[in-house]
Image (cartoon, rainbow, N blue to C red; front, top):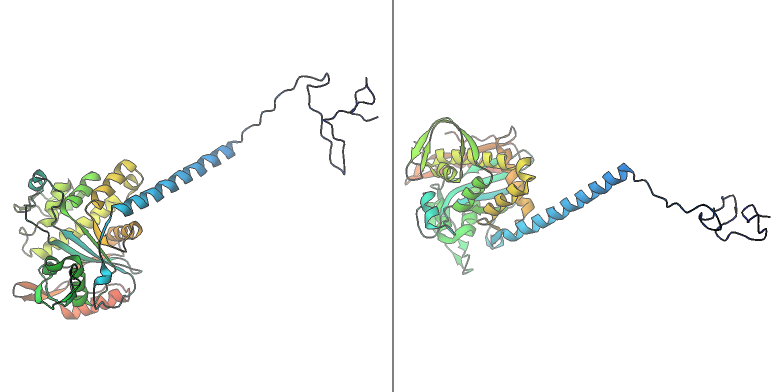
Length: 370
């Protein structure tokens, strides 16, 4: 007789019972049937570790989805209007990445009150207010300001609208290239006069610049000397201070308050942009959507870039700019040697050495001092 049969009915075999087989224990009958005790439901005890794991996996998935969504949102906001493939007679690319960063005096989208508050005036069209080459490579970032009054040769070029070959147009100010045919001719002129290949282009207007500063709550700056510039709306005292968007724009545009005019102004622009990047690329901004998205939105609305630019490359540019003030970074003006017709003349010997160091991704040892 099987031990699992009912003693009252010796021939009865519990159908729920499976006898031992091949060394495996049998399966006990379900309780609560055939006169047994009432069935007690089994409750599985949750393991704390498993719950934590599920929460972490969910968090990672949410962050991944949010990051992908943010990437495509930012990519859709960028105005990819500059086609560098149309630039002719380009120098060979070297090591590292070269960005041409332009601050324009575009008043696009600004109200009359904003123009008044920001002291921008109401001039039609747009011109370059600042131009910089940012080299990002293995030897650290180098930021080189190109004075807009630099004396350069505007070479032959392909018209950005007509597609026809034009020029050369001879000697002129560097910012005239932008005024004549926009970003593509500016890139062509910079490449022709330096021999340095420009990989990417980024341009921001007045309102976008001021909007970024306001979105992060202002930028802290420590000024050695105070100065005033009525035309730019600047009125600063020496010492530590937090600049809002209006003050920041006045600070980077001021030139009439300085003896060296544009050269001193470019130094201030470099200091401010490095501070802006350093204070934006912080956990309090990057991990706070209520700060991150307004900051990105303010900048991307007026940001004009080349067709190959994307949010990843833009972020690399931004972090390289942040690192310019670190121990491995360097900021400088384009070395000059006197002037021609009132325009600054680049020091050709230093320029050649500088470009060679950048192409080979070597530490820059060239000085902008006379």
